[in-house]
Image (cartoon, rainbow, N blue to C red; front, side, top):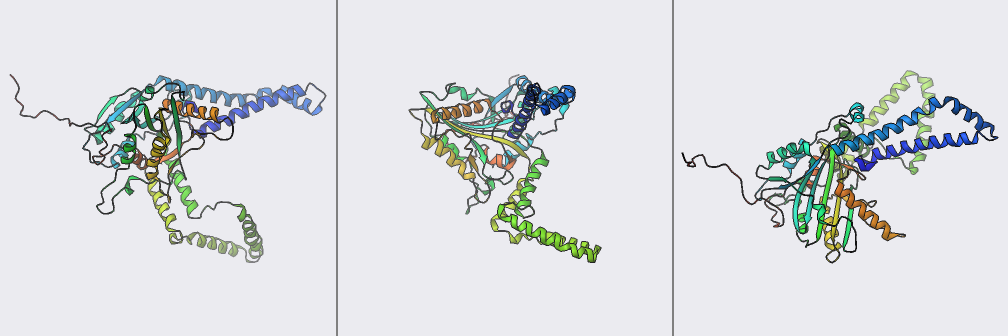
Length: 460
């Protein structure tokens, strides 16, 4: 299911519905077979199904049809709308911080509600998806954006508005520069999907924290990544990909509020050690107040309500640890901005003669560690997709994972591990380096464009 662009939650729901549908059919078949024997109970059940099949069958058949038709309309929608891969070459002398990328991501937040009529008629069954990629192709660093062809003007206008001297042009898919079948006897692959270590509403370390203490000058978060990428040699590639789609504001806000309530203690995490306290509270608060209610009547209810209001007003932020207070402030700021549902991947591909995990894997993930804040959140590899295997059939299982991560990357699949990030977090991870990043391997524009001078002589 997920290969057609659904997220993990939707795919799981569809899988459960299909499993229920198949289970109902199998149950009906078994009952009909058994009803032909000497089992009286099954005969009665078989008779009920035989006479009321027109009531029982339509429900699972209808849900099964909706699932299949929904997948079909999504597949047709994807095939109908072509995608384009754009390469962006930023100017070499830009002095803009990652904050300007927030404006670009905000402009791409084109979420709109899709009703079932639009979905099942195939007019607009999916939210628009964008893919932002940073790729080192044999040591040369490129910045790519993949979008629908019809959205190309929107993407280009948003970038030119913030980077008027940048160059944007259509590019060939760089993933085709490596063999189609990977891994093989000559080429090796390491890859993984990314996930957040904590709840989605808790932000990672953003560009606001990348400042030099003495001068206050910003440290570009991508400087380490681009330097590592520039060290690769021929037949060696490191790719970083983020596929995302707009998230409804209400869903994002509810995620943050739920985490805030958990931190402030309004929602306590249930544990087995607390079961005894729960029963003690029930006996104390319920049974202990029965006599008071009987003797005092309405006054008892009013006293109990006042006690509950006092308990709710007892919350004091100073009772939280400094780390919890910092997390609360960070979550409040994070959910105040638009968000996207994101799928992230990192892939290292190379000829076996130059394949070096110490540089490609440790170096690549080492640069992502700078976005980690132990008090807040961090990006970590998803062990369910990482290309390794233990215990049994290790070679075949690892080869399957390697093929899977390469295929998902090439397809820009919005599937598997997904998480939510605000536009500030995305701008921290993906932006165009400023002039302080002097990595020569970055494809930049060295010359400025300009209009001809107004007093330029022209021939009559």
